[in-house]
Length: 409
Image (cartoon, rainbow, N blue to C red; front, side, top):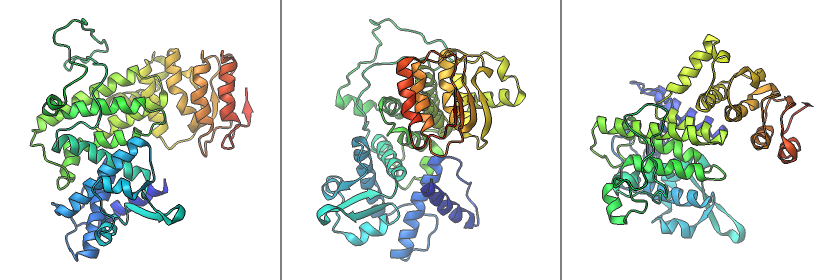
């Protein structure tokens, strides 16, 4: 993404100039957090003649403006809006008549243009910036106002915090300790926890048909780390919680993500959950697969669906273009094969024959075939029961202008 390249260059240029040289960002959340602070520094230097290059505290006006923009970002992201109007800004407390302050802070974050009939329309510089600010709003609502921006979960899911096994214990429906499905608003404000926000955000992102909350979720979980909260301490309300409490929250969220990885059937959504684990610094399953891959023992191991997802994530994150990807190399179930399919977009020749694929796989393959600049040229789908429905789905990808397939079996 050109915009991400620009953001990265902006952040790295500032960090590498500093005498103390802060730690270089390793995650998307860290990169965007630094970017946001740098824009405030640039604004204050330009308009307020400030000389500070590492602000520990934001001015109330800067903080207020960012939080209002964050509220706008969240509300419009929920609606799926990339462009909004003056009325939307007013609802979030943004006064567009204060042009000097408004444009000064938002030059590199927010922009306005003339639409039809010369009516002003507004948007964030890039969707990823809107998603980052939306995550700031969700987290600040939880930390500062004790509010959860997402509705209560319709179904309570149980898992044991102290049990690392793969087995999920079921509880009796009449258990007197079962959580209430609908919680009174006042009671919820008192009892809201960061882990509750995480779980509801994960559920909402997985429900999204177009994945519009995927990157938002990664930012939200990344911002929940103590190190990232410290970076934005001038913007976010400090909880006063101990390091141990923060670690327990992260641990609980990691367990919930792991549970969802096993439960979720969509390969693309599972990949995003692995991105979320990376933002939280939890890569144990991916590291395990990497070790097995390097040792050459992976083809001899029976892989579970979650291991297949970890392998897919690992191969997708690699910059290497595979000459050939033979799905039969791996010993797994039909579901496991399904989760490995996104890897096809990174290879030149995909051998998917004799892999018990059905029409369910064709929707993923159709998406893969429409990937811009994909190196895939040869696709072998022989000896699979795709059926008419599968072929119809597959043709959506094959007839796309982005499809570069030269040989189809």
